[in-house]
Image (cartoon, rainbow, N blue to C red; front, side, top):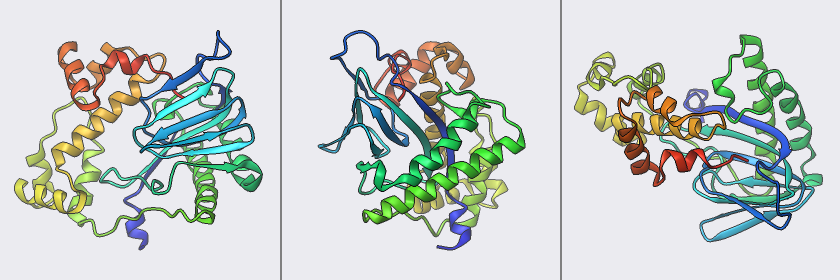
Length: 285
């Protein structure tokens, strides 16, 4: 693909931890199950076990193994004594498709992929400068130097991940052929406050298009409409914020411009099948 095509790829770190799985107290025989996570990620199991289920398949990792998860809806299960290195990230094209998806999930022996652990260690160290307990690094203040450092470390780890996946016959997805005017509108959309109404007519005018023509181009290139794309950004923001331990449902509702908490709850339930409270009660891993 051309360098220009790769510019459509949106990549960012969400978190990187080396911790016991959240909530692993009490009954040692308990199994912890979570269903509200759709991000890309990988876990290096240190103690206990980790398992992911999706598409009628089940993948389980024991100590000394990486579990590279498929992004999207899944069931995540952990033994009560599970301890793991967890790195979570998003790497997606404008239509929402993921860079690494086909062929996942998969389990890899850590001894066969030493670079994954070697390169995740500096990310863990760098996260100590931000917040080692955060579930979304994007909400923390960092200066330009630290931002570039995090991006560089993540990209190096992703190169190692791509090599491991390629060795197992798993390649990345590609996305080409996006109209320059669509690309311009996408860039503009990402500058807007998610809590403010979006004027799609104004966006079309800035791109030199009618609103109907812009919708047609979005459908052709991204298989969605500008309004649907905007709504996806908003629901993803809501999901990520609600999953943070310190998040309050009312605060997230206000951030997204809802005057009434009941309207926000119905909107979240319609898009996710779960109430904001149910999402907030889940615990990331």
